[in-house]
Image (cartoon, rainbow, N blue to C red; front, top):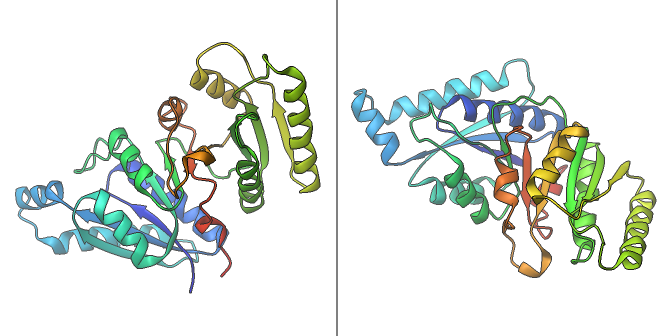
Length: 278
């Protein structure tokens, strides 16, 4: 059974942009794509106001699927599921065995207004990784940044980052969120160990020095801008347990960063995304 990338849509420009990026990934990874629309009260209100029935939603999904397959060798499924996006997306994941959820945010023009607060609630409920896009376009992900606290159970995060690099064929930029001011010797030892692990895994990497001062999100974003990062990877701390992404205190600002860099949110114990090829 081919793997599936899931794309929720409210037919806004932002969701269309996310779908376009998901189609590129589907072609690169050899997966199918599934467009899902949650038929909720916003949808029904829009249908009523325009004297349409549910067939209009199906037609809009069909048109979007046709747009995404144009010039590409990918299969695009469509789903319309009754309920809120918080209920419909997990149901769609179960129905399709999806490995990745790709979402657009700040879609003001769509009739469901899939904005930041809703996106964050969806991300934290997902049992699979979520890749968040805004308006900005990216054709490839050759540079990926991972903020990493080397004093806080980092090994599984690093192993997951290695798998991401192999999947996207990218260079990994690691920026430390705790630059080792208090324990400089232990910090140096861990940085050396991380470098050794990445070298043995044959991963191209760059260690970006951390900063002891400043707002965490602004520091990370400035480093991402300087390095021309194409995707930021945020991972829950392992001790949080479970199989869902749990954002840290600064993660929300990074997810909706003003530079519109795409952000991949996951728990290091999520393995769905790396099962591509089956």
